[in-house]
Length: 215
Image 1 (cartoon, helix red, strand yellow):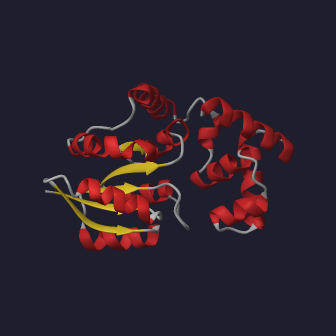
Image 2 (cartoon, rainbow, N blue to C red; image 1 turned 135 degrees about the vertical axis):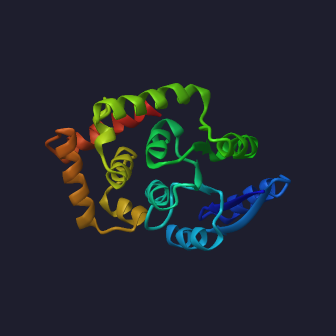
């Protein structure tokens, strides 16, 4: 029996995913929760074999949670299930320790295959991304860095970068990420330094173009 938990703050999606998983004889859903802190407690208490985790969570996001769980529960197999385009986030998820990435609109078709592949120690990614991501990870392992400077950003810096590219101002970003505008400015300053950009307008233009070319 494969014990599974679900971490997602959308109740309708959670219930739908549970309904799909309950149809599988070899799968037992041992818990569901909405935040990273609840997930850590659930995983500590229930010891699931696999976790399906959304990226957009309050507080610690799904990528950060994945990294924490990979470090502290290395036997736990993680699959990210997200509305965010896999071409933007899948490589970060794999770097953080995830074994798979599924777009939410495809979850109904792919969750069973993901369980089968991941439980066998394989990665579950779309074929179009698998070669690119594994090549990127191999390059990063060999050289200590990736060819794309955006990949040098921390997970939270990347969240800010993505939202800037989506046209959001500091107030909107603060609401989405639940952080202060002062903290956002600190992240933006760090991002500009890493990307060698001099101004906020350059950062905004760079982020818009990067998202357009990578989604």
